[in-house]
Amino acid sequence: MPICELFLSKLSDTENKDDENYTIPLDLGDIMSICREYADLGGKIQTQIESILENGISDSIKSGSLQRASLPHIKNFLKQIIKNPYFGEATSQANDCIYLIDKYEDENFQNKILLN
Image (tube, rainbow, N blue to C red; front, side, top):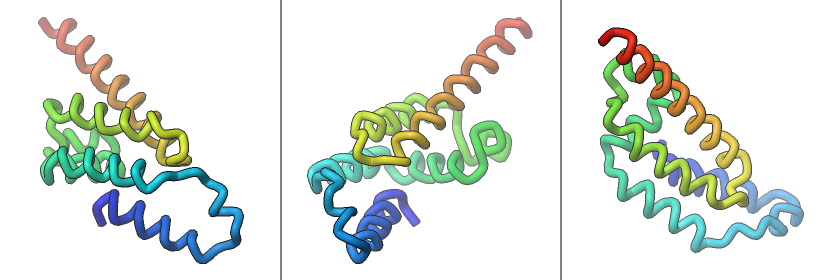
């Protein structure tokens, strides 16, 4: 299930819970903005993000389901999620994912230098 659909389904699931959920100041414009950003990535990069979430970065690259060239685009998308603290746990997950991408890039950049 695409991230936007999953996010919207989770949002509708919480609507039926107690009134406490209505105090979260999440604006429909915020949701539309992040969905637009996600749609702009295109299907190939969306699939790669899903692979990262399911398998991690190294395993996704090893399996061929993630291209190194896509990492900057994925990081930019994740940074858009982090900009809105009202996305709750998603901001923490996006931050963790950026950290793992940076770590992967650093390790592989250093390995390239050592091999040359």
